[in-house]
Image 1: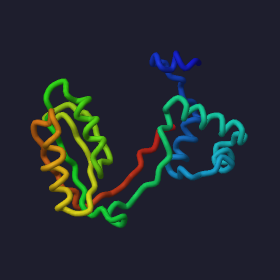
Image 2: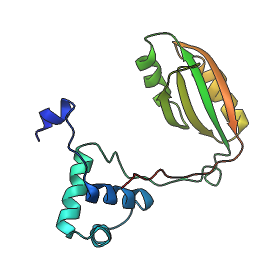
Image 3: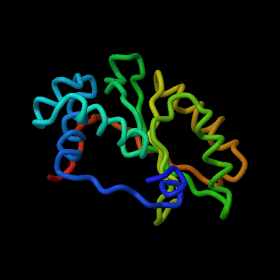
Image 4: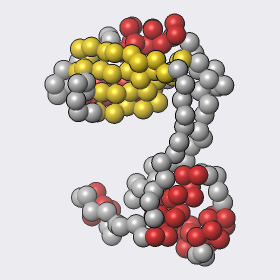
Length: 160
């Protein structure tokens, strides 16, 4: 499949081995090619090629460390909802991506328009982030902050 076909929206389908590789990498993003190959019963070259293809196709968006934010010095976490001016999503998203502590941003349907997860050093920094930075972004009409008291991190695994 050419890059033009991929850009046009066509996607290669994932087979049983691809999904098994994805599940393994979700559990341990540092797993070696050799380990992955052994566990899904393919050659190292095959495992390497499959992972490279899934990265190229955008199925695998990257490899990252899962961080305990409190232990890393970010003791305050919150979900922040935003109501935004209609058709301002792209500009608002660009501004939100520049802010420190923003982990996840989603355009959603329902009572509010945007849902984001943020981590800050403490509640004072959270207050500054919401009241001074987010609310000053052109296109943001209103915010609501939901403090996170405790988190349970569970990785969603792909079905077989």
